Length: 135
Length: 387
Image (cartoon, rainbow over all chains, first blue to last red):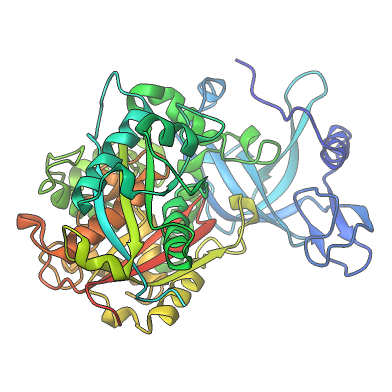
């Protein structure tokens, strides 16, 4: 069963996932107060300004916490278990949810350095993901 | 000022567990009838109704469907949804309604038949719907995984062990074994918890709450009515609330939730502090949750809650009993209903007379409920006397 991908995207989400499809993780930065936020929304969560710019994130982050999921929440994830759900603190500040994918994913620890990668969920639908940085 | 002015006049529970052939509405009506009987009040004595939500029976206006089903005539009614924290908001709003003259006696009801009405797979799948549809759900997140993130971080920061979490489940099961209506009444051991199926590590099956058919109800009225009622009144002494986020990715902190702020507001209203509380009911969707909440409510220093269960303080015979009905881990859980049972149990303990389940000191009780992923919080403080 195919893994899910976001549907019925808002304008900001559509931008975010279009950038992902082109290999970029993009965040919004407020033009008025400088706050960088995730997840994409039409106005700054610190000052309310709607004046913002998209910036390209470095793709570096560290594991704030993680869980190895053994019981699939829905049938779509039955072939995927066990998998890692993590919160990654991006170098730019915001926190996002990710899977930790790739080699040694199940051995992940809090504080591990992660780097951006992408997962193709078919038909050009691309989900940002993270993997452990070797060494 | 709300302090001392509203009372809980009656409490009731429906049948709990797997109750086939009964809708969420019928379960709610059953609990409501029992709460009214407990209060010594009849249908025409109730003029207010607050309900939470049902996932199996999603009426557009659930309170209206329940009022009609029961034959209630209302001046005041609403459906209040704040996830697992709903009951805290409902009870406070009911108290405000009776104190302000908006209603004379308000039924607060929550119930759902998630065990037979949804089935386990659908009930678990519904837990995935709490994740953000774009930025959480595609990663296979669901509520157990989100609380696992909290548990993992807590264990990392404070050195808590899987045994510490397991001890919460074991203690609450021992309490549930003394509750005539609890869903799970077979004793549990730490070894059995640790051997249970991993769901989202570090959480295992017995770290997770139940999926139940269950409804609970309370009757809230003015303190002046106390003499007319069937039982000694239980006074609402304090209430506090806080909200910080909806999705766990947006939580300001995994460990410092809004619970502390809610508890502080409730203590301030009551003019009491943690040392004045005799017994506590702390939301327990997972074993990590009451540990965190015990710290936020001031019953243990940050990182030190495990000691409450290690040395037996949290058990019924202990110096500070917690979740004496067994909680959502062993008594019942059905949406907003699990949290509502915390208030039902607090009222029963404060009245006294619960037999093998009765705690020794029972003049004050603190209830804390939360919704989402430690997202919204409500603290209630009850007492046998005005303060």
